[in-house]
Each structure stands twice: as structure tokens, then as C-alpha cells.
Amino acid sequence: MAKTKKIGLPLTFGIIIALLGLLAWFSSVIFEGEKPQVRLGPLPQYLSGETAFKLSASDMKRGLRSLRVTIVQGGRSKDILEKRFPFKGLLNSQGIRRYETRFYVDPSRLNLAQGRVDLQVRVWDYSRRGGGDGNQTLLQHKMLLDTIPPGMRALSRMNYVNVGGTGLLVYQASSDTVESGVFVNELFFKGYPVGTSSRGGVHVCYFAVPYNAGVHPNLYLWAKDRAGNVSKERFPHHIRRKKFRTESIQITDRFLKQVLPYFSFYPFEPEDSDIQKFLEINGKLREENGRVFFDLRTETLPEPLWEGSWLRLRNAATMARFADHRRYYYKGEQVDEKVHMGVDLASLANSEVPAANSGRVIYRDRLGIYGNTVVLDHGQGIASVYAHLSDFSVDMGQEVAKGDVIGHTGQTGLAGGDHLHFGIMVGGVFVNPVEWWDSHWLRDNILRKLALLKP
Image (tube, rainbow, N blue to C red):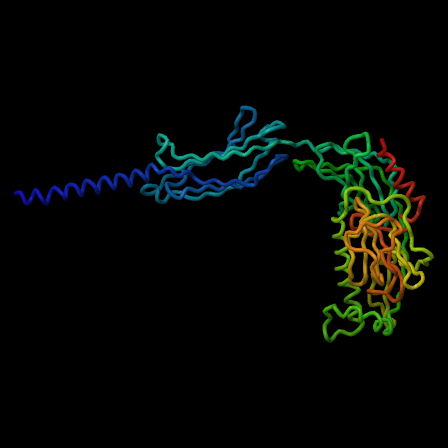
């Protein structure tokens, strides 16, 4: 009897301890305190129209019970998404642990007013904590509702632009504008704010009408505010048609033997003939060089660096004009055609090349078919190009004054003789340099408009 008692007592205690352990485990599972994980994106600072949000929620322990998405403004709240998840299996072992969805916030449908808007996401799990409501995660995101597009208006009224030429628009934009400028077809030309006018929000935008812009290019003023609202406005303008020359160029074997050694760096195919090599560099390499020029538009400064009339290479004859349509012939057959995007000027060999106007050096290197090339930034999207140089007299980043020598003429690159290839770019697009040399054009189309900026 005594022996039985000695055996039963420890067994009883063991069962009690096991039951207590099981109860503790069950309680830790049922009343676990880990909150659900919630992710929301994007998290915009401004709300300007219907916006999509991606929501993901997870709870790896008790599983998801429910979620609710609410918009709150001025003490009023509106539920825009509510979801309940079923309890499945023992202890919700088959319940939902992860959930992802997309929802949309449409200010007009929700009748939201301009101003602050709060986006709230609440997620609960199946824990029995909180009186049975479960653990709750609250995520809040504050936004400003702004659906009013920026205001803008053109200040310069006489906008006559030649095809292949440059235009300047002076305009006013509202204070919430973060980016603005002029579109010419699909090309965007950035505008720059100026602080010299008594009127607020005044900008200038130099833009190009490319030689191939079409009969009736689509020009309009464009602006975007900090909320992403966009305005588009037409402005008065008149496009003058221009005719460009067609030029026939005979490619000889002698010319090929002269210029091809310069391109020993280029990865030609071993079996390529000399004319095939020429077509490769006149086509593919020319396009690559063009992208280099276009990308330099981002290196411009927001303030003007130039002043007054622009200089031309002294005592130089014009050998080729802007937008000349060149047809290349080899042994009597046309093999290629390209458009010349500058003016070729020939003077004495190794002539000093002056900076056409004040600026800073943003490119100084060998550049494919253009040979030794210098590009000067003149601010606000305007740049000048000097190619086929025999040497350099300036360094990268150097500030130069109008008339400073930047190098000497040469025949580097795809050049058949000593000359200067001179170009002007506006927003990375080549325009006719002749306009910038013309003091009358400069006065009528640029300087008179800049006078609007004076107090």
C-alpha cells in the first residue's frame, strides 16, 4: 500500500506539470503578442489624381483576421477597402498567413478637398489578446491633395523661328512649378527661372526647331508642379520654312587611304573593305558621337554665361553649310547619305580657333568622326562645338572668355583637309550657327526678349 502511494504521487505531479506545460503552450499560442507585418507602397508626398497602392500583410503565427483601409480628412473617414479572412483548421492552421492586393484612391470619387489627406491601414490577427480582438497593426501615411495644375503664360509675343533655327520664349509660371519648358514635337527644352524681373516666376526657354521637324511642328509650353499636375499651353509663334542644300560627295580610294588610319581604334571586321569601313564610321560611329553631344545638354548651367554678339573664325571661307544633305558616291554609285549638322570653315592651316562667346569647357577629347573636339557650355542649354582641331588650348572645366583661343584648326577625325567644324546646340539639338553670328537676328529674336527681364 505504501509502495503504491510512493509511485502514484510522482506520477500525479508529472501529469499536473505536463498539463500546466500544455496549458502554458496553448496560452502562448492563443494569446501570442506578435503584431501583423504591413507594407504599403508607394508613399507619395502628394496626391493629384487616382493613385494605385500595393498592400501586403502577413502574420506567420495566428494568421490574418481582417484588414481595413481608410481615408481620413477633416474629421471625416471613408473606408475604401475591407477584408476578413476565414478561420480554418485546428488553431487556424490552414488560415491565411500572407495577403497582397492593390487598391486605388480616387480623390474625385471620394469627394476629397484640397489639402491634407491621411491614409490609414489597420490589420488584425487571430490572437485572443485585446479582449479577443487580436493584435493590431496601424500604418498611417500623410499626403497633400493637389489637383490644380500650375499656371503659366507667355510673356514674349513675337516668336518667329526658322526651321533649323533657335527660338526664345519668355514666360511666367506659378510658384508651385518644379519643371517647365517648351515641347517641339517630342523634344523637350528645359526652361530656367530668372531673378532679374520684377514679375515673379519668370523663366526663359531656348528651344530648337530641328531641320526635319516637319511642315507644322507641334509647339507648346509645358509645366509640372510638385504634385505631378501638368499644364500645356499654346503660345504665339510662326515657323518660317527653310530650304537646305543637297551636296554630292565623291569618295575616292585616295581619300579612304588618307582618313582610315585615324580610325585604327575602331573594331572593324577583318574582311571589311575600305569602303565598308568608311560606311561603318560614317553611319554607326556618327550616331554614337551624336548621342554624346545630345547627352551634354545635362551639363549646362542655369544662368547665362554668354553676352553680346558671337564670333566667327576670322578670315575663313564657308566650305559646308548647316543641314546640307550629303549624298556620298563611290565609283559612280551612291553608297550613303547624311545631313551635315554644322558649318565647315577653312582658313590658313593651324589657324587659332576663338571661343565664339564666354562659357566653360564641358567636353575636351577625341570624338570619333569629329576628331579632337571641344564643347563650351554657355548656360541655359546653349553650347558651341569646335571639331577637327589639331590640338587643345583649354582644359576640362576651364572658364573661357569670348575670343580666347581654345585650339587650332586641323584635320583630325573624318576630315579631308584642314578646317573647323563649328556647331551650336540648343538643348542638345544642333541649330543653324549663322543665326548666332548675325547681330540683327540676335537683337530681334533674343536680346529684345531678354529686355523683358529688366526691372
